[in-house]
Image (cartoon, rainbow, N blue to C red; front, side, top):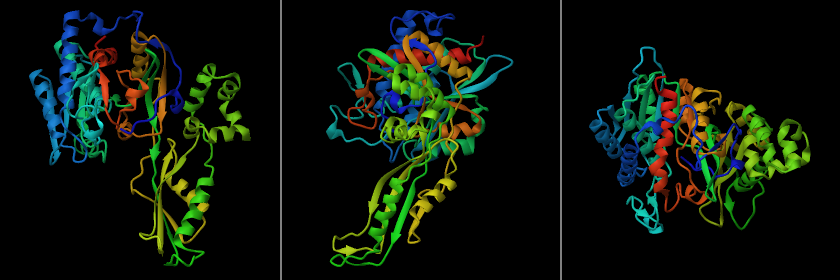
Length: 481
């Protein structure tokens, strides 16, 4: 998963409830983990740390992935615990693992899926304190590529499955554990599973995946962020064509000159403002935390956007701009291989992110009209386009996020997020699954920024208690009442 910078200012967030991490106020009903004897909880905490270190030592750098080794690690534990599971080797060295704890009631609800990906991005050991696949503990943190994205969360999901089995929790819905390959590159693991083993999802109602963000500042949790949706990518490739020649004699209609003029028009283009209901609700509910003038604008964002000066504010505010419009970023340029050669073609790539529900073909035609040059072509970089989607916040699972967070994180708002990045939730929602990004761990800004960066790590104390947060979420939504 590509990391989204921390802070509510880059999320679509709706303040729904006050909740907290320390000084927990017991709720009714009590959290399920609180009923487990302390000595057994200690054992689970020890296992979580041990297994997290072992898992982080498995090199699943993608490319090439080699996630079959991680699947074998999961399978060994699941087999020992007597949990039904299957491994699917869909390509050399690449595998998906599926496991299931079946419901115990006659009338079952639809399943919940705990989704995680086993692959990690590349790392350069020369820039790390310890080797990226050492799983070493330094100053109270476990270091390893994947500690934030997302091996530690996958490990917490595994511990939850083991706890549910060992504690003989009666379930009114199946709990499915799904570990997939290749999320960081082509999502071939998820695509293969949906195409070939979709029935094993059991018409699931809910999914918990990577994403979400629980920001820790000065020892306190600032907010609990739950990802409910993402924008979608629509990358564009521009090619300008013109008369080539020697660099010593400028050509007015050269390919590079045409490209620059086209790009200038595109970058000056103001995509229309569009206010999604979730964005409108977020801004309205965040208004009390803003200065008076800004609060008034947030309370009525549609009216505020009619003001030209406020539009300019949004234009220059990276935290608001992407929430209210489709965005265009110039990311790549190419032309001649020599300074003194005017090439016949010059090209550029644009990273376009569309809001949920947007029509890619209509957007493409609008960009072509802006370019307005028959010698400059604009085409999608990828043939396939997925319309962005998001899940509602009025579901049983989202209510459980609020309930459990209220126990563990008092004083922090629970906020749903619409992110500018991508997760595989986009691929599962069209199957009728309400998919959310939720993390049971907190992280400081510094820790969060190690995702895809150097010295990726997670605090041992988070590993020792994060699985309890997730266990209480899963039991609250899946335990037989």
